[in-house]
Image (cartoon, rainbow, N blue to C red; front, top):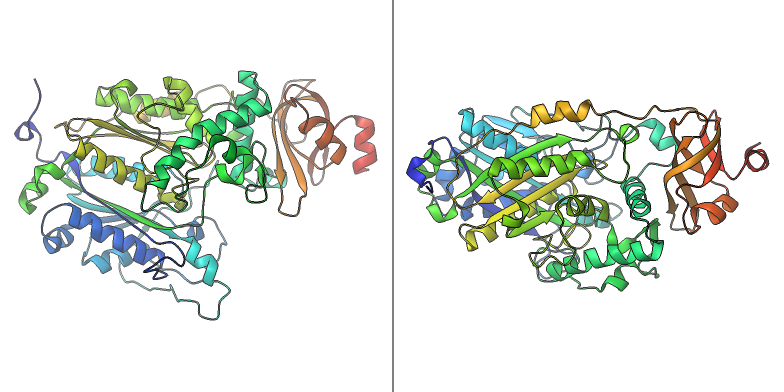
Length: 526
């Protein structure tokens, strides 16, 4: 029998407000807002979206949790225009909230959905009652004014406690990866997409076409989204055909199909218990439930048995749906994290979703077209799904949020159908993932080897650098190597199919290098 609101525990968590803010450079009304101002404007929208009294809701907020900006996501990164020393409390102060707890989450695209899952559980447990989640990026504005004489000052000092959870980079980035050319997200994700292409046994041209066909519908959604950073509809061919405006980034990616980081966007969500919603007068048509949720972490890059997929991400998505008691076929609204093609393909492959699925695979337009609002993109996706399930009462929406290098996945199911809070079993599933067998590694690799996956990075000046993950022929150990030999780049990595080719690797004090043969290695590096 269907439940009604009175059947539910008063501590059942619900989403009651969602808000977004954005501005394009040189657009009418452009105000060069700081990250704090964009997040605060989105938070005001989210509080207003509850349909209850603004002051009453704001003063009831006991917890504010925020995602990190890119300029505060890596050690040693400078904030060119300055930043708040307590981002969550800067946002809270602007909306009239005085929370007892302020949290700055670890980095990663999973963080907005991860925060929803965490604080929904906290509300259900009684340790929180009204929670504001917020985040933003103002990279476009910061990039423009960082070298300007008229630069704004985004520095803020705010009193109050802060639970800073750190960068969250353990197992995501490493010095060894950086020494072998893995210094950027496109290069990592290109390794996954090229491995998938080889598994599917399709040509480079066929795979590029598939990426274009995957993302062309995303551009249609972005073109209709008032918050999109690149609201331009493009054809599949246009997305993947190299041009002066669409230069190669890392094979198989061109610029149009990688996450767009230069955005000015903020988003926020208000969560509260049913008891708080009734007390504050939030109309029931604003209530959205979270019947399913999960959070899992993938094995580290070199520990993954299969570099063409992320089974932990699939497991998280499947578990969230299982907890909700629905399947992908029951969903009306879907947003799959789309920084690159690989994480979209990963979920689509597992659940039989086609690029042309009539429901669409994004509600925003996706990270390359709506904009990759740093760690906060999924907050926009959640806001979009919340809006849509309200418009279609009883429908179900899904948000899949990917973080790191396909390293972390948080999933959430949303509906207006009254649903009890059900704890997930992510901890037990994580123990299973952590126990999966991992290939043995060779930090120093020497000898003949087989290419397992690869990419070629393209710098703006035309310089090319290859990155190879391979297996030693002698013992099967996996290694990471850099390829700088132009002959090797032309004859192997830019050939019809590099994966499976026999190559030669040698270790040096500066790292592993790979080329055509031992003799060629002597010519190039000795």
